[in-house]
Image 1 (tube, one colour):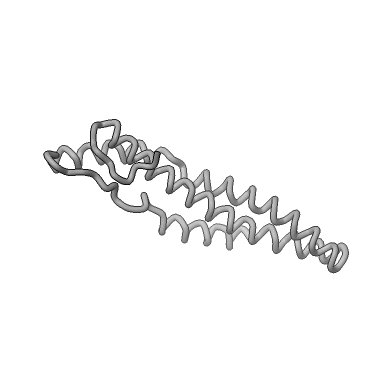
Image 2: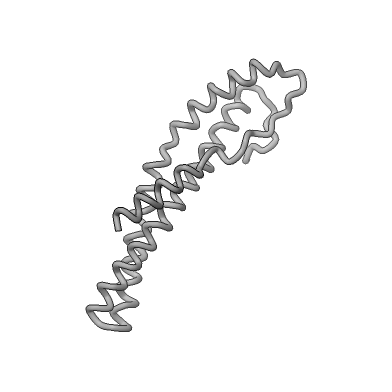
Length: 129
């Protein structure tokens, strides 16, 4: 199960970025200054720990679906069904929870990036309120 979780996590991390570049009004903005400010704000966005968010999501998902799987398996097939249900539920919960955690962290990274640019005086059109 751990190998499967690590593989899923690695796959998720390769596909996660800040979503897309912020939509910023560049009227009367020096592109060089903007690139410097963007790089500065990206350092703050990178402080959002996707790995930790994915790990917490995996643990929470594993616990919740593992318990549900155990109950469903027990109802259907007694103690042996409970064990199989727990293992299947925990595996699925870990994968789903890891994905949810990483996606949420990616969303927060984009939000941090956009808020930073906004605080620096840029008009950011895709800033969440």
